[in-house]
Image (cartoon, rainbow, N blue to C red; front, side):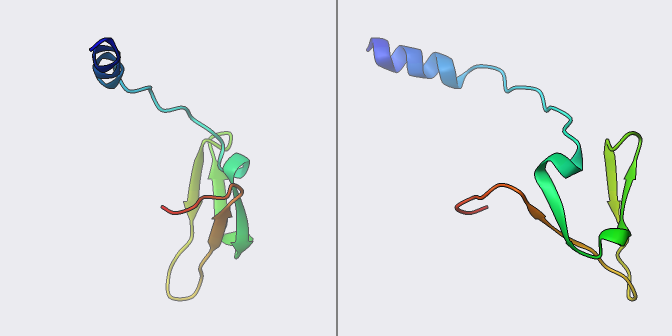
Amino acid sequence: FLILLLHSAAMATTPRKPVSVPFQNNYVASWGSDHIKQFRGDQKTELLLNKQYGAGFKSKGTYLFG
């Protein structure tokens, strides 16, 4: 019963607040790096995507899925 109670309490906790992390800390351009623009001290990232240009990026981390 105690384990169930502790598990229920852990599940009811408030979710953690998101943390701002610069784009280049977690991702790397795979192509079109000149179409990846950084703003506001690297806190905002935009990709130029239209019929003529594009950009691609990949995660520096490895994930099983998702």
